[in-house]
Image (tube, rainbow, N blue to C red; front, side):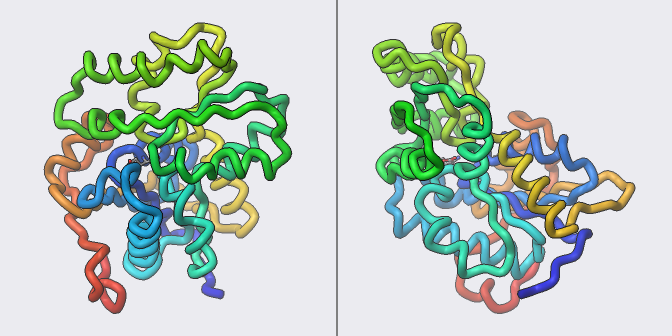
Length: 281
Ligand code: DGL
């Protein structure tokens, strides 16, 4: 087992900009930590890919985060990767990996959880039934309705948002919320909190929405504290951004959607075989 240092960065990844909704929260909660964010823009969207592909992409990204920037912790800020890949690949790595689903379920069930929960997610996540399985395994006895939202990610990743199209899709996807009289709705894809205002305009006011980001941050805190790896340095941490295609477009989105200064996004092909042996940042 490798010994990690407090000064090592935390790796955060997603298929694209979605994980930034998690990174923003992590950045606020851990201002002294350094972050390396990787967006797999070449393979976006993950939500319509096969499990085999998602496992392959996730394995390559985590391998690179561990060997290249040598992160002390990986946050899979992607429900699709968490749902379809982490169970299979986590044990291959020394570096601890935190996904999106377990931290959410754990902290929701600590309190009195809502009993009729809707989960907005990608088609691959919905098909995998992983959210449901993890809720049930943790003792949840209420009702879960998963709602696949295939058009959200491409619309959110577009250069310019088409709010009318986003709203139209949201109206269709959210119909079931009233039909099933759900009382809570989870953003089960890290892209979706970006369109919170559109979703919440349509939802009945009795429905609570849940963004897993703060639950993920809590899990990060617990894990780093337990391992004595919280960065105690009294300087502000930095975030670096890398992606697998079109770094300029990605940089613009990082800035526009999440407000990070990102003028020098680095293009990184984590999926090429030579990176496994010697490629660093
Ligand atoms: N943001 C990701 C998730 O949380 C992936 C979305 C996609 O690429 O389809 O599921």
